[in-house]
Image (tube, one colour):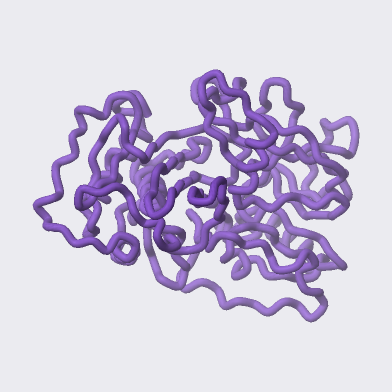
Length: 404
């Protein structure tokens, strides 16, 4: 983002202008000391398109870190602008908007190549968080010339700093309290699939496997310029899990010497300060702030996997293709495990034999992969053959309407 004219910098320049001129009570300017930082990272093991973390001290937002994962670069200027605009919405304390609300930048977006600027519902929610009126003359041209080192955004209104923390920001966030008054809210933006055909089409391998043990943690964020090296600015908590193969539905495992294999799940982000070491406590806090769902040792899963980029010093491994890429197998039924709340509309709980038959049908299909439609499907009841979710209430910390 430091080089003028690069795709993601162009996307954020455009979307900041979009939000600046939107019908809200916030305007934007650049500053080398601003509390809101936008950046990019490259993590082939992260099934999210981006993240935002808002830190509050008492009633004031003191810091916001927003980042986009360029591994999921859509290859389109307008779609990058939509993704950047989505993350910029998070920087204003807006969480994901439920699909029932219609087409919005912060929620259901069937075509981000068309819908890439804030919609009415998006701006209405910003005005709920920041209900401060000011004259249109307060809007100023954005001083692009001082966009020099990296993208830092200073949000100002009525001469005050950010001040949305006196109440809960819109939506549901994960809250982590590091001191009595300081809190961090984390938002994740999911890469999703809307059908088994889409999940299968994205997958290198589909397997039924048992999680046997936890592996090490490594920095799964890669250097933007050389993927074999870790990112020097960001530590992405790449948790390794070891699995034992039970059934290969699509077989890409011939090259493995045994039936065990590794899966990596991204489980948090830690900014790296020059000269500082990442501690176990740092990793614990980052995991607590993230919305991932850990695998359960001894549990079986249906996994939709792709081969991940091999990292220096890390054995070859797989990672998930898109939410929901993992389904718990329990008492003859499957349960989608994902923080994406609307997955239940597209992937209902069902018997394992029915699910496997539907996967085979999806693999055999040569029809176009269906895309997200409107309205969303009717919520299907859980099969009478299936017990309630065995791990208690499904852990859904975010109302996570996704990127399509």
